[in-house]
Length: 357
Image (cartoon, rainbow, N blue to C red):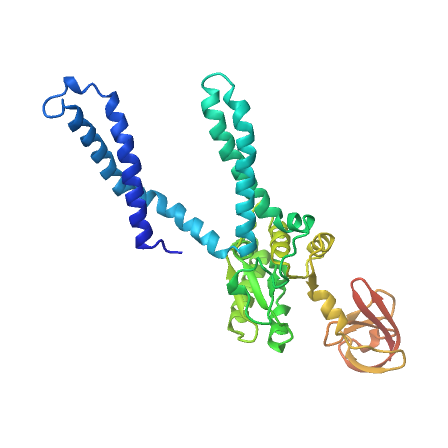
């Protein structure tokens, strides 16, 4: 967010006043009587120091503080009302704790009694804001304060009517099937790619290993394809929950903050997110769920493309990738044949069909 000109003017005025007063007090330390005229006058030296340092502050304060102020305004603009209230409560609570500690700290000898009360106020205010910003949902629940169900902490840009954000991880982008699903129109939410996921994808695409580099570039191509799909918009967001350097852990934290699902096909992320109460949409589970149902006795037409593990077996695949193990299929290698289903086996890795010519 751009810092407005009125705010820059306010920074200049406040900087000039604060540093002008500081310059006036610094002039008390100068032995002005030994200075040449007209600086050897009490009033002149004080005015000169106050005006000089004040003018210097007018020039230097806005460039120094505007960067931090812009970052602060960006954070506030992305925060929800619940987060802002929680941060204020945490800040106030921290100051109250520091005020209770101020009296015993003031009984300490010099210079601790002058420094420690101020340091404790800063420390506890920072801790209060940090704790409330991270755990305000749990804390509000403990004190029986209910937050609205419409994702109060979700950025407004991510909350079009009747849509919810779906967080994408790196593996599902590289996999590419999410683009095919998006084209069908079954996804009823915006696809959200956090900046840290995009950075990991770019890191994979820049890898020195050929296979890894190809996977990363495929993921970038999938993102381009998704961005062209008007039915399911893709948004790149800068939100970073912090507290960890691991991409998977950041995704889980972000999903908990927004109370939205993660779309993935990563087995480990699936388990970790589920244990923490985060909804996971697994592409592999979806693929297994929509595979055609076959019963023993039905007939199929399949191409035998390779030998099986057992003697005389042949192996083919359906259009959806389901493996078909054909008894006595070795003699039909590289040919299309009609087979009869004898058994359907469902495993953790997927479905396997046994058949015979």
